[in-house]
Amino acid sequence: MAEIKTYTAWCQQSNGTGTIWIGKVDAPSGTTLDSIRLSAIRSCAIDWGWDGEQEGDIHCLGIARGDVDLVYWDDIDEGGGPLGQLASMEDAP
Image 1: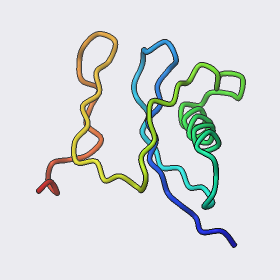
Image 2: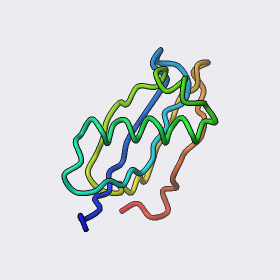
Image 3: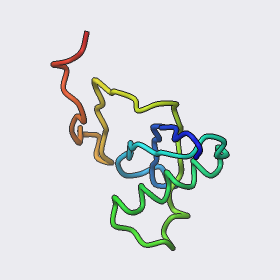
Image 4: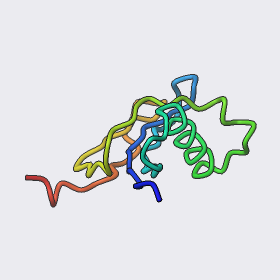
């Protein structure tokens, strides 16, 4: 059985609007980067409640190795205001 590797991905609507999705993607060792990217897009679409036809409207901004432990994230909505933080600074060094 292949070792399972964990990645953290960032996705956003292809038109650059909306919030940025950050999520974990697990894949067997040896999986291509493109397959990991597509898996991230599918996971994002599911979390957003979008159907399979809307996956083309999602762009994968980046992929990092491991389950990244974010200590701060401040997303901006289309009006320029904060949408909220995904992690607290309590555990920050």
